[in-house]
Image (cartoon, rainbow, N blue to C red; front, side):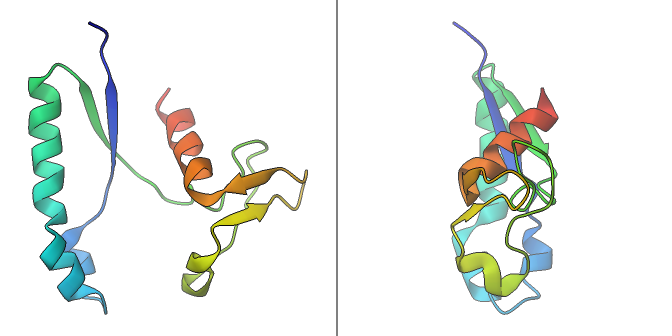
Length: 104
């Protein structure tokens, strides 16, 4: 059986609990989810790492420039085009590629 890797975003439930979305954050149990993923992942023999996701959605995974939508109002932008080279990105896929590039 091959080893699998699980990367968990370093989300601080306590910091989010101090924002407008406090009730949603606390109700969803993000801290418990992270704890369970770490426990069950290691138990199954998988690599489980908590990663810093800073700038992963706004950094182009092709060229590395900061071209993505920035700021809270831009969270609704789900796809964008790199202003440097014209590469088209899905915000989530782009972030995943950036995280994998950091970890390998």
